[in-house]
Every structure is written in structure tokens, then in C-alpha cells.
Amino acid sequence: MNAPAAVDHELVEAATQVAATRCRGDNHTVAAAARARDGRIVTAVNAYHFTGGPCAELVVIGAAAAQGAYELESIVAVGDRGRGVIPPCGRCRQVLLDYFPEITVVVGHGEQVRGVRIVELLPETYVWADHQLDTD
Image 1 (cartoon, rainbow, N blue to C red):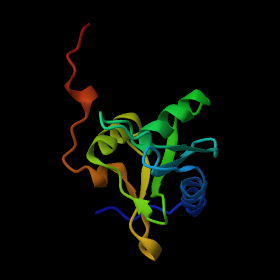
Image 2 (image 1 turned 180 degrees about the horizontal axis):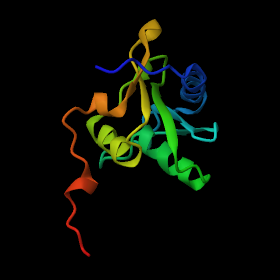
Image 3 (image 1 turned 180 degrees about the vertical axis):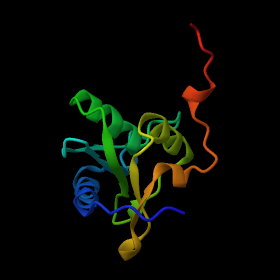
Image 4 (image 1 turned 135 degrees about the horizontal axis):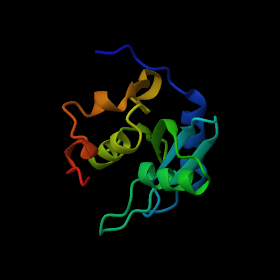
């Protein structure tokens, strides 16, 4: 197993602040924060819908791209109502791996949060690009 990555506490605080101040009702219950390679922090909230609305991690990827931040180094999701850090679901793990194979994800609870590389959260990974037919 690889050595743990550093925890970006500023990122956790940013997501915690957004979860506390911007999550409302049943439609927005999780906030995410991501750090771009240039140091910027981008935040977003999930858009829950019974048809499968996007998780906060996916919304933050789009928000980052809209701001010209295409290379994310770390990400965290935090639940509203003081639920703390929430690990990414399987779909988000796959998307994070495909978009940012070197990204660090903050996971854990309370004082036990830690940073892990996305490949550690998705062992024996399926890398979409590796399975595409060569069209040349």
C-alpha cells in the first residue's frame, strides 16, 4: 500500500462551509471542494433528483471546467447537517479515475481523515481509455 497523501485541510474546510451554508432541503445535501493544479479551490453541491441527479463531486468537476480549471489535484465531499467527510460513490470513483488518475481523495471520519490516491479507492481498475479500439 502506498504512503498516505497529505490531507488538504483548507479543502475540507471549504466543503464544510459550503455544506453548512448552501445545502438546503433534500435537493442539495452534499458539498464538494476540489483544488486545481494552480491552487484555486472550486466548490459545488449535488443536484439530487429521483432520476439520478449528479453527486457533488461530478458537479464540482463541471464547475471547475467552467472556470478553466481542467487539472484537479485533490477533492473532498462533505455532508450537510454536520455529517462530515463522505467517500465518493462507485460512479464518482470511476469518473475521478478517468478524468484525474493522480487525484487525491480525502476520506475518513472526524480526526481520522486521510488523503488517498484514487487508484487505492478503486483497485483492479477499469481504465476506459485502455479498452477503446484504435481507429487509426
